[in-house]
Image 1 (cartoon, helix red, strand yellow):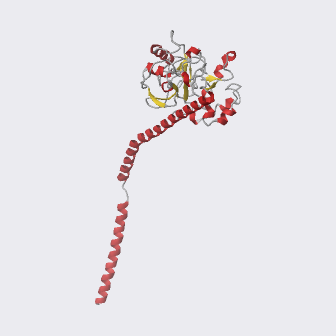
Image 2 (tube, one colour; image 1 turned 90 degrees about the vertical axis):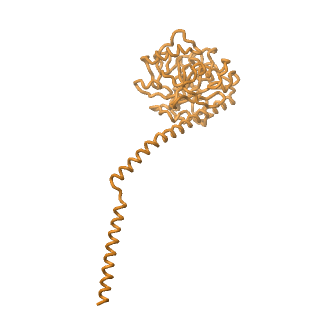
Image 3 (tube, one colour; image 1 turned 180 degrees about the vertical axis):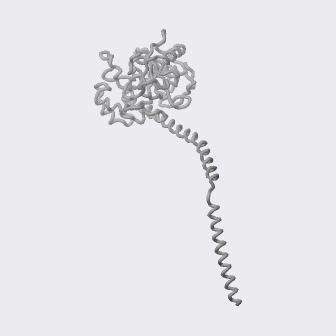
Length: 354
């Protein structure tokens, strides 16, 4: 009888033990699960972290794009110096087979400084495929002009809509109107009529802006935000061809903003040596509030005098390339006269910091 009781007690103990273990495992499974409230809290925390981190990520990405943009200008400067070493001078802002007195009406079809710099920017095959004996808008050049070149594009700007290549870097004509300049008006590092040698930059190569950034147009049938288009209107009466006064620049800004004619395909090509495509001047300050403006109301190819501002998508200013090859960031708030003089190669005034 005693043995039976022992067996019975042992059996009962085992049965209770199994029941206890099953109950404990069930409790453990239940405690491992998240409640709906807990999930919502976790999701809310993740959302807050994303909201906090997203601006920092965007800033980091823009910093990288800005660095790439600066590097592109630096490479442009190296190509510029290598060209000078080979040819003893810098290229014109606009030239080619049509750049002569007998065909001046077609000068808007002349080649850009960018086209001449191609062999010094690892683009020799493209350069050798071009035919410099015909206009840039004739075969085979027409198709070649649509070639997108990373070194001519700032990643902070939007790509030009359409088949055209787009271009974000522009050479400096200084504080001159550029297109119909006389030799006396050839005051920039890149001019329409007169090529420049480094020894001609008597202000010093570290004091003369050679190139800067610009923005591609929207290629639209309606005006955009005013900074990525060109409008046609006459200059204010009495405006100087070099060192246009701030009073006249401000008056021109007002008339340009209200002008009825506009073109939104600025900076669409790197091969064309005109103001709206590959040239700018230091007449107006960086990121000028008004659109780019030229005096011909019907010139969609920008073959006329104008005000072509340096522009960028970077907050607060633009990168500029100096004639010595250095790249620096210039604030939008730079003094008006200082900015104009920084584009002149031989005005004889000390610039100081800018």
